[in-house]
Image (cartoon, rainbow, N blue to C red; front, side, top):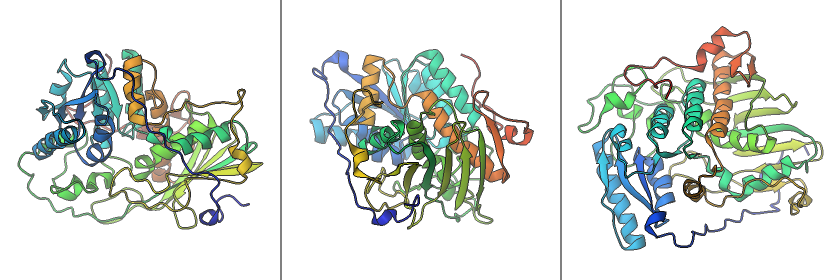
Length: 451
């Protein structure tokens, strides 16, 4: 069968089996308590990360931080309402505007970072230097250069770091990766990754900064631009924020969704600590309106092992997900009907795991490659904090999967083939492309080099 053809009509040979996480014996003992601070209290924090840790009674969110004072107060109510309903008790929660003050609190063991993308790497670096363990929402960084600084800082400090690429903790993605890793589809030839696009639009008309919102600091290292709600986040509710669609703060879906799917592709290929050697791509970019991240796109990458990896916009014929094609078969994997947030921009059709032959789903033998099993991404992080063992999505792996996405974004912008050295993390004989590995950083928000 031709790769990608007729996937919507394929029969399902396996559905994902999600096993409830088992908490540890004696989890409520004081020595087992983990005190957590949340930095960034918007949509993904409320819909995904805060409830993801609070469901474990020993994980106490004792501090919340946001540059929007309204969101800070709502976060306090959200946390205490959750704990009251689930455990019949509340916590004394400290509130902060500035994350630096939260990091200085010695009572806090770990932080969850849910800020806009352009703040990810800097806050993660400052957190590990302050002795905190970190759960960082993806993508890892705004640029490849700052991602390298982040990974180096985590490794130098020895802190526990988990990237929010939670698909690694879903059974169907692990099974698909093990099928590929163990050669069950023969020699892997192609990987096709389908992602959503983003619409043009957004109102660029400057308006007054809302009371209680520190917009100057929110812009961080990026250039100053006038405030407009469509550039930041809704003042009412927690709908999809406009910053996700502005290149000033991120690269769009290629990192927003891509950091998930390309991470799984690297896991399946065994290329978690390297990257492609050739990259090319094209994309449609808006010519008017405020939002300027890519829409429809198509990229092609070549790895040193000869595997070609394609990125493209999802469609009815090619639904969101990852298709691995080998000489002897194929496997397609996706999230099914799951959404991390109520207003995720994509709906999913079909089964979460589909294979060319049900024999591919046979149990692994003792001699096969067995990938790490995690049934709950947040629990995997909490357990890593306790054991000091690496979690399933550590810093260097996260940096490499984000880099794959950012390489494609650079290729989209330049519109020509690029040659990459994944060891040196530099383009070969291409000053223009190498200049795009970093961005100027506005004072005083630059990442401090060195420890």
